[in-house]
Every structure is written in structure tokens, then in C-alpha cells.
Figure: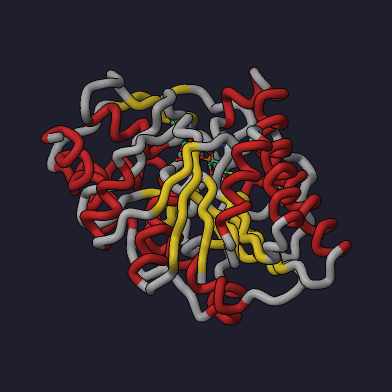
Length: 334
Ligand code: NAD
Ligand code: UFG
């Protein structure tokens, strides 16, 4: 099966490429390298023995996309490409709608033109908004109370995909709602290496460790949670990558939805202490005020994915921390 990964040099795409190549899938990657580096392809080769064919194309470049699809003969697209910085999306909403929504429409146009009928989409737990309960299940209503344009783009794209599947009875869609991906490949050769300033917990912890950021600000310690700090469902990126492989086998005409998470919540202070244990060093932090738009606690119900896909997470936050340290050491030596 020939698979195109949009955004495939990025954090989650590159880990998924490895799992697919290991199982014999024919993988090609397109990315505009806005938030990833071309050297990721060499790391994929070191790990798998295969260097995927790469197109440096922007989703918004209709001509470039068309040229790629004209020769691609793809059976499936896994659509990772998108901008994901929540804070930036609040300041530059049009950039986010144009890139994420506009880019997806161009992609779907090409898929239609070249009769590619299967797509897996990287959605996010953010589409659930604030449900008033911590454990999130797939049948909950989505699209209400989303607090930023980034999250809105995920919801809008989900709706577009549903409409496209409605209009074409042969179209197969799988929408994967990721919880909080962390960690890196155990080889230490790839991981999260954003070009932009991170605003997620784990990349900030990494930059505090390397000294690029002085200390971590813990956004609030007065939530109604185990220790007052925010609780999230941190999923090891290799488990997340394997979730994509599991869903490929189950795709059929229509739309599938799955949460990809562990089902377990971890607080910010627990994350700090797990990182300190793995690194053997204290991580400087201070308690700051709550961050606007943050929820106290959320985690996935992973039951549907387990029952229908036979997939569940195998790795822990501790594994993620050890793999992250490995990766940081690799980046230091590089
Ligand atoms: P990433 O930034 O590492 O990877 C995304 C890739 O898409 C980057 O390599 C970037 O250069 C590329 N890209 C962006 N716009 C593009 C365009 N117009 N044309 C071509 N390439 C483009 O991010 P990631 O963490 O690997 O996330 C992958 C997907 O998963 C994204 O859609 C993201 O919104 C979604 N997601 C991520 C998280 C998370 O916390 N990492 C959580 C939920 C959902
Ligand atoms: N946090 C801090 N300090 C920081 C950064 C984060 O204390 O410097 C806390 C947050 O307050 C939150 C937790 O760490 O309690 C996780 O925050 P992230 O920004 O890493 O992740 P979020 O859960 O806020 O959001 C992320 C993505 C969303 C996605 C969601 C899925 O940014 O796009 O995961 O659950 F939708």
C-alpha cells in the first residue's frame, strides 16, 4: 500500500513513517519544512534502512500538490501537516484558517482529482471543548466551547471530512483525536524539535533542561486536581504512531472517530518529577497564574480504540522521559 504523509517530517509524522516502513508500507512524505528539518529523513533511514521519497511542497501550492499527486498513485493519505501553536493562532487567526483549513481543501481537491479515497486526519482532543467532565469519549458533542482558532480549525476540518464522505460513498475517513503526545523514538534519533518557540509543556521542559529557557512556569496550582496543577493524558509518540497503523486495517467507507490516549491523567508536577528522575537533575520551575483557556483536567477514554482497533498504549510517561533524555543527548552531540 502506498501512503502519503503530509507533514511527515514533523514530530508525529516522522514517528508514524517509521512504524509504517517497518511493516512494509511504501511511504512518501510531503512537507514545507516550516516546522521540521530535512535531516529527519536521514534519521528515518538510519532507523529503518529506507529513506522515504520526499517532496518539499506547501499544502497551499496547488500546482506543486497537483504535480505530486499526478505521479503518486497513493492509496492513502495521512494528513499531519498543519500549524499547531495555540497562542500564535489567537494572534494570527487567518494564518491558521488559511493554512490548516485552506490547505486541507487543496489536499482533498487533489485526492478527488486523482481518485485517492482514504484519509486519516490528525485531530485533537481540543475539539471536545469543556465538557465539564475529565474523561472524554468519542460520542460527546464536539465544537462547543473551543477556546482558540487552532482548535476551531481541527473542528472545521472534521466537519469538512464528514461532508466529503457524505458526498462520496466510496470515501474512507478516520479522524484520530490525539491527546498530549510526548517522548521520542527509543533510538534517540528523532523527536520533537520545533523550529518555533514552543508553548506545550514537554518541549518547554526540554528547553529548560538545555538552558535555552531559564525556568518552567507552572500555569496554576489551584485547580481541583490531585496537586492543584493541570492534568492531561500524555501519550508516548511511538504508541500514538502505532494507533495510525491499527486504524488503517479497519478503514471502510464512511467516517471513523477514535481517541488516541492512555486513559490516565498526569499532573504538571508529576511530569516535572518524572523528568527529574529520568535526567537526574532538578528542573527549575515557578508557580505562575493560570493560562487563559486551560482546563483543569482531561484525559481520553481509550476504550473504543481498544475494542475496535485492538490498540492500546504500552509505554509510560517514564519511558517517554527516558527517550526524551536520549534524544536531547543526541541533539547535543550532533
Ligand atoms: P509538527 O509541527 O512537528 O508537524 C507538522 C508538520 O506540518 C511540520 O513539519 C510542518 O512543517 C508541516 N506543515 C505545516 N503547514 C504546512 C503546509 N502548509 N504545507 C506543508 N507542510 C506543512 O507537529 P506534530 O506535533 O507532528 O503534529 C502533527 C499533527 O497533529 C498536526 O496537525 C497537529 O495539529 C496535530 N496534533 C498535534 C498535537 C501535539 O500536541 N503535538 C496534539 C493534537 C493534534
Ligand atoms: N503547562 C504549564 N506550563 C507551560 C506549558 C504548559 O504549566 O509552560 C501546563 C498547562 O497549563 C497544562 C499542561 O501543562 O495543564 C499541558 O499543556 P500543553 O500546552 O502541553 O497542552 P494542552 O493540553 O494545553 O494542549 C495540547 C495542544 C492542543 C491539543 C491538546 C490535546 O496544545 O492543541 O494538547 O489534549 F488540543
